[in-house]
Amino acid sequence: MEEGDALAAYARALAADSFGAQRQAIAGYAAALDLAPDNEVLAARALEEALAAGDQPLAVRAAKVLEARNKLGPDARLVLLADAVRRKDWRAAGLNADRMAEDRVFVFTAPLLHAWIAVGTGKGDPVAPIVAAARDPLATAYGAEQRPLLLIAAGRTKEGLAALAPLIEGKEPRAERLRLAAAALLARKKARKDALALLPEDQPSFARARSLIARGKPLIEGDLAAWGISSFLVRIAADLRGQEVPALAFNLARIATFAAPRNSEAWLATAEMLAGRGQNEAALAALAQVPADDLLGQAAMDRRLSLLVENGNAESALADARAAAEAQPNSPAAWTRLADLFAKLEQHREAADAYGKALQAIAAGAESDTPEWALWLLSGAELSRAGDWERGKTALQRAYTLAPQQPVVLNHLGYSQLERRENLDEAERLIREASKLDPDSAAITDSLGWALYVRGDYSRAIELLERAAKGEPADSAINEHLGDAYYSAGRRYEARYAWQAALIYAEAEAAERLRAKILRGLHPELAAP
Image 1: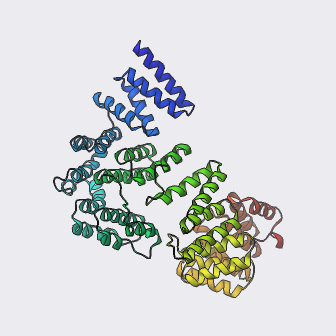
Image 2 (image 1 turned 120 degrees about the horizontal axis):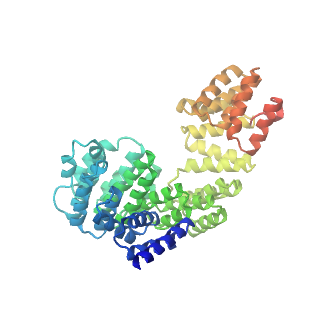
């Protein structure tokens, strides 16, 4: 009778799953597992669905069934390890880490897991397992990043900072991530001065972290060892996702939330992967786990708004962003978020007004993650798109005054005048300066080529536009510019080929113009802006 009941519960769970009723499906799998606790097929399915739904108790139950049948894969083993870590059962965590060493693929994780477990127990040298795994290239590679964090977490700050120094010399994402992680650990250890020293004041991406540390707000919540293991799993998940292994990447991200439920990085990674699966509602639920005042609270809010828009709930997104901005009238970040959303929805005047509010907050002394010059640039661009060129130009000039060496500012101010066919000498000068500062930018190369085209130098214009198109072959505007230049130089066949390439990615107004050019050729009213 129980077997039949289990089968019926399993069938109901499968049916609910097929209709996207995840909550009912999970309840069905749990009920079926109650009735058939030794069924490994059922346990495997229950584990899969528990990870998808974020149901840790069911995931642990299912993993234990599979363990008893010796059918536990490495990600399922990590479910048990995460459960032990969350309960601070370091002995059980260590035993599960030992079993990870038996897996041919995930053997590299064992020394890193043991290292963080040593932090949790407070016994032994946390770096010793990494040193012992020196012959494993993956363990060594991940160990190089984990070593300074482990040392700082263990209270060996001087050694940790020395190990960190060569890893953060550049400005690539890895260096930024390590700076933030180390600063968070130092702040947790009350080494506020050392923490702030890792976060340069001239890098806007560190502004929020600096502000939180200066106010004594923790960047890491909960147990340090659990945070370390969770963050390590997120790191592996990101690498697996980049290697096109999405299912395993998702499982590791989800397990990272099991190990440290207050690790916002794990929730963001999980949300991103859920969104990649098209499970936007589940992604929104994951993002809701990140508190607004968390270091990553703004990033979570930004992603939430973009998901709402993708779901067709633009009005809800605007309402949320507007409410957040009005609740924090002195927050440049809140107004910038609202402005970005207006811009995405092509509500240009409203976007410009919101950028203006962000600038007012900065003028009143508020700190901003976004540089002031960038906000003037964005404001100018939106005013121009709204048809208010005079105010737009003034805003762009203000951006130029604040950041005369920023290629994007030089290019935008120059090109905006170029497309209106005004101040052509000044426009070309600005674009040339931008090109000197960033010679590899296809967008800037396109602008310079177009400046030469507007002034009738078709030969040199084509040379630059061809280079720009080679750098960004899918850019519609660049290909249209190249087509216009070819046509004006008498190269009609090549012109139509370039226009056809532009048409593939063109938006409505440009697409109509391109079709007309392909059909009738270039006429003054059909010229690209």
